[in-house]
Image (cartoon, rainbow, N blue to C red; front, side):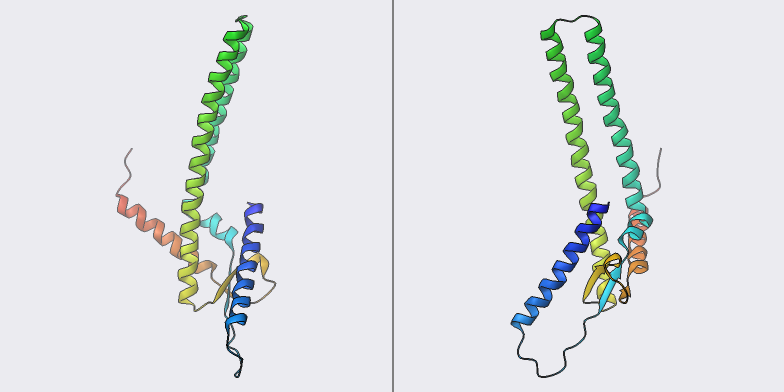
Amino acid sequence: MRKSQVLGVIVGVATASSIGVANAQTAAPITAAPTAKVVGIIDRDRVVANYPKAQSAAEELKRMEEKLNKVIDDANRQYEEAKKANKPPAELEGLQKRLQANIDEEGKRFQARISGMEADLETNVDAAIKAEAAQHHVDVVFLKQAVLFGGVDLTNGVLQRLVGANAAASAAKGPATK
């Protein structure tokens, strides 16, 4: 999560800088006082911690990680049992390749699911941030951790949008069945 925060700060600063440079390069000579840009801030950690979809994704990832670890443990157990049974080296090698292929396949599914969930969450959070920024006429949004003071805090509005969207999606699915 720390790497994501640092990346977010870097992307935010780079984006704001490039927008400012691009505007400065293409703008006509300033004859009147420039208009002030409205800066928004977002506490992304609080958003993720309070977003139900992110919490359920974290729970799903934990279950998937447990499943992957079980596959690995089972493979190790099978290999050790084969070694104890004094299986021939060629058979051990074939078993090892087959078990490793199973582990690799499960690992690929795990990685694909992580990527999909991460992209989905990021899309939802970014859309909520953009909508909240537009509602408050905010020109640029930074991570709260990158701003010493000032700025319009959009965090509560973003959380309301995400929780509302999550509730609407749950209602559209209908009652849960077991």
